[in-house]
Amino acid sequence: MLYEIAKPFVMGVVNLLWRPTLSGHENIPETGPVILASNHQAYSDTVFLPGQVRRSVHFLGKSDIFAGRSPLNRVVAAVMRGLRVMPVDRSGGSASRSAIDAGLEVLARGDVLGIYPEGTRSPDGRLYRGKTGVARFALASGAPIVPVAMLGAHEAQRGRTYFPRRHPRIHAVVGEPIDASEIAARMEGAEEAKVLRAVTDEVMDRIQQLSGQERVDEYAADVKRRLKREAESAG
Image (tube, rainbow, N blue to C red; front, side):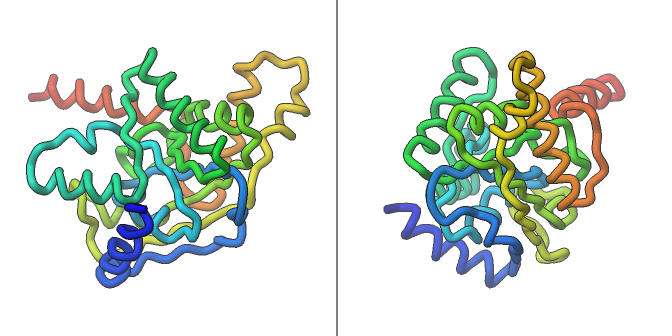
């Protein structure tokens, strides 16, 4: 209920101020479980993308977003919850299992699950190596993976924590669904890890085709940690 109440209000403000656009909506199935797999350029992705999709989208969001106690943090957290962003602890181990269970529960209900295969926001606007969680969700649930490219979000958000600039305008491009089971069938007999990687790489290839981003064969989280160490050493 909160989602239905919050979404029109939030998107009314968003459309008035930022006027985001979306193309390819016809590629999102009208019913049944669906995985929206998007590149991750900025915090605002988690508002601008699901806000423009007709179906309700449940995103797995980093728990840090919900942790701040300042008035601004609380407002942002309330908006995120209103848009069905689920706080997830990504520290690994049992926390990772909890995230997988939460996502599978969404798909088991026949709903739409939003996920960022890169695992975290891109530090520089490039497209980083995808984590295999998206493939696990698809193969376990049978849900199609719909690739999405967010354009302009990195440039609009650059240097800002929460609220992007009004220019450039942010545009989402939705691609044709990917059937993970077809990829798995072509690799019958292969190790699970290889199948998961093949599905994930196909998703990232499709996102790159939609976005035109430069590809980086590293995990974004590893790059962020390295940049942090370098900054600390220089300081």
